[in-house]
Amino acid sequence: MITQVTKGIKISVQTTFEGTFFKNYKMHYAFGYTITIENQSKDAVQLTSRHWKIYDSLNDMETLDGEGVIGKKPVIQPGESHTYNSGCLLTSPIGAMKGHYNMVNMDNAQKFRVYIPTFKFSAPFALN
Image (cartoon, rainbow, N blue to C red; front, side, top):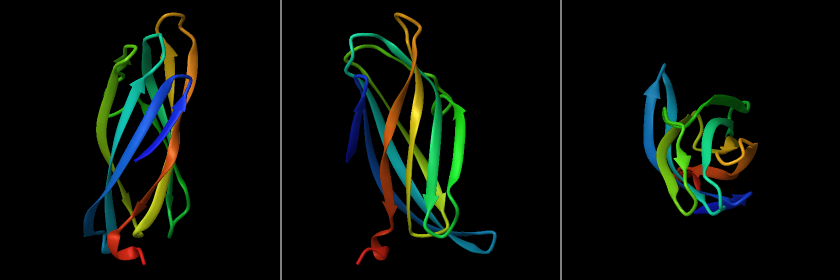
């Protein structure tokens, strides 16, 4: 598990290899990830948007921006956490993701970024 803390918000990431399949006559590698966002600060915070950089060892880096996570903009109280699952398709068995969440402190309306540590994807058969 990979973890990082920014301004009292702890991000933990666990990845899994889900399998392979063909799409548009090309092999794809499916990876899943579970992210837990834990509020270790003294103020309630809300996640408003996300920014991802997706690295595929056979392709250029892809940038992805969007509102919330999995259709939600969770408010996380002090001492509480929010966990969600998502996934990524790559055209190679090795890759990585990193990024940040845009957050708002609910007590003072201050906006801030919480960094998501780089986490790697690797199909078990690709490791030597």
